[in-house]
Length: 204
Image 1 (cartoon, rainbow, N blue to C red):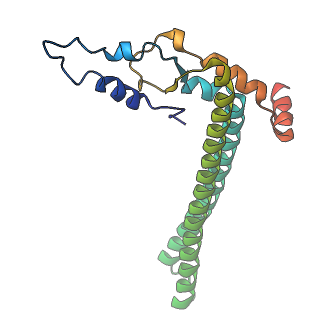
Image 2 (cartoon, rainbow, N blue to C red):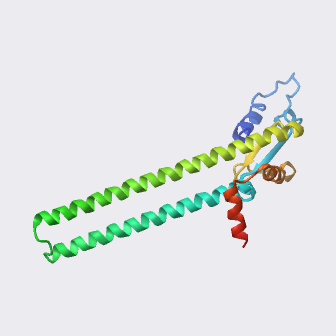
Image 3 (cartoon, rainbow, N blue to C red):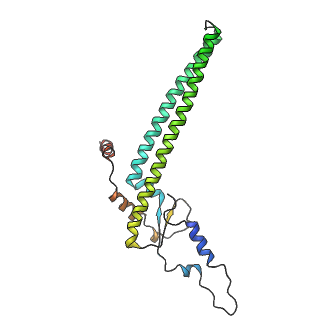
């Protein structure tokens, strides 16, 4: 997602390579990197703004948050049940509440099985959430790339950079096409029926 069409680092390296050779006394100085790229059309997109203003990203973020909350609540409930079982076992063991050593061993085995089940559940839920997050990232990247491919037929930018945090040290705002891209993406986005109903409920 952070590399839309061309990386900022690769662009910086390309510019720097134009200045590697020093001109000889009888030669005219070579053009600087800025002169070599002066005819290029460059733009950038603010990734943070894209994530907070693109409706698809906002909807999917809500979905992921719900899944994460449900998983956490399930694990907390199972964890509390396990802790209660452990506490009861220890109290009964200390008060000689078991009728036999075999009975105590049976309860301990059941608790260990409960603990393994919880660990397996945690791994499964984490895996499901990771897969869902990967699906979101791929869908976001595909929708952005498809839009930019169409968008750039008219704009004809040579390079479109992604700006996230300080990965670009300085960029004039005249190269910022974030708002244009977000508006275009939102016009294209058609949420699923379920998400439309969710939005109606949120407004009420």
